[in-house]
Image (cartoon, rainbow, N blue to C red):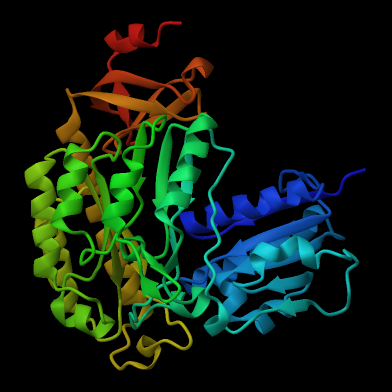
Length: 440
């Protein structure tokens, strides 16, 4: 009888691509991949450590796993596992902790699944982690997260990612396009490019060998993929040539997610970001000039040390006046071994929460304005397999989420529809007259 394994992923799209790759290794080793509640013999939990909340989530997932399968062998990998292996090894029920260099060799370590009194830890120093391991998610027929870059050479004062993932490194353009062709052959219609700092793509063996723009041009030639989406790119690395290429591209969609973090130049300097807000505004203006209907998402952090009320309002007003589509709001949390943790000007938790709430409301407003600007337009929608309250969802090329009554024939299908109204759940309804588009 084959042993069963279940997976749980915390954090970013990059983690999802890596969990999927590790899952294929388990399958090749004879394990049956099952759901979290199906009493597996092994749980693998892939962790994030961007915020303190992510650390707490890891503990909660371990506790829930043991409720479903009390004798299960529990393995922790991911950023939290690299940063705090000893802390994780002391969580009740954890059996093995694998660092950044070891997580893709997991099957080698599974010689004995007998629970021991103390967890086993395999964790090289991050300075020795320099290999790029190719990864992509598999299982969602509509969309795949394809890892093109790992690690980061930047030194933002709030971030632990370089400590958890090491320096910037990438695969070759040739290997990534090979993977993209294999993904296309599997029937997937959309690829989302992921990494820690994907605009810094091209570093191998300690030196720059390629540019992200060269990868973009090569992937645009891959047959069989309808859409390619850039998950997130730093504003200083989002060049005009990339924007201009996407505007005329066959496959790259009009959707950018561009981290800002703060609209105050004072705070950007304290964060050691590599741009000022003026450059950010220029990038948004360039995108709008060439792609008026482009979706533009923004990351922003509230409550960073030294952020006064005036600094926050500076950020709020900057974002309010910027022609963007939505925000991802992060409330600052102190992380060990970062420069920001020792900075003066701590912002009280209640103020952080209030500022975060204001930005979440602004995000809702921005998204609604963006959706309203798209009403009446005819767009291609790629439908997903999810089903909720009798409806299924899909997204346009420019990331407008639509809903339609569930029809299994539509899963992973692209259809041209007319966007007519914002629904009560905040998505967009499709004109009834377009129902004939869905005819069987």
